[in-house]
Amino acid sequence: MKGQFLTDKGQIRNHNEDSGGVFYNQENQMLAIVADGMGGHQAGDVASQIAASVIQKKWQECKLLSSPEEAEIWLSATVKEINNTIFEQANTKEECQGMGTTAVIAICTDDFATVSHVGDSRCYILNEGGFKQLTDDHSLVNELVRSGQISKDDADQHPRKNVLLKALGTETNITADTISIGWEYGNKLLLCSDGLTNKVTDDELSQYTQMEQDIKTSGEEMIQLANERGGEDNISLVIIHHDLTEKEGES
Image (cartoon, rainbow, N blue to C red; front, side, top):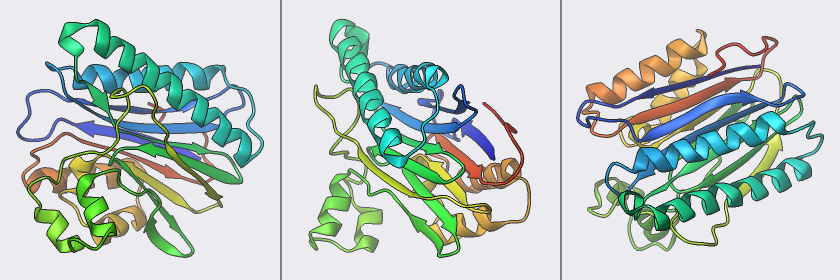
């Protein structure tokens, strides 16, 4: 199984508030995370780095997860710990007030993948059924689309497009949305921040994810396209390929 994390500050911003990585537990099972930080005086990077570092430490201590139920329980507890850590720092350090972060996390074993998210960072799967989004954005515009108040096309141009309804570290009790799916040889997962999805369409993401080239090259080309289209935001992604190669592209 191969996993590759890539991040870029984009064309406009002077620093990168995204964090992430690909990590392995004691049984060589893979976990990937993309976190998109926000708020405070340059504290978004603090929030996203906390999310990535806490989950890396917890995962490296984790033993074998043999079922989706075990993975979901582990993720639920770890997301709560991340939330509490960010919330406490945001409320004790003046320069961190108001900070928070999105997070999309995937645990990948030989037989299943468990995906958890808070905010509008996304996870897509490519399998025999095609390419589809597994997560549902916790955003104002997505809720307006779901309720039928605006169309999906309207959402792309909505003035409050960046308003999140949920983010880690912004309140004491946050519950992530978590799902588990079958995960087979040849499948791929794409995790990404909205710096990518705001610039590259789902059809284009599908095309790049399906390309018969190494996953690092596919990721770099997606980031390049987002930057060519303005790159106003930081851009981060993880591509995971269920194949026979172990621990390639560890970040």
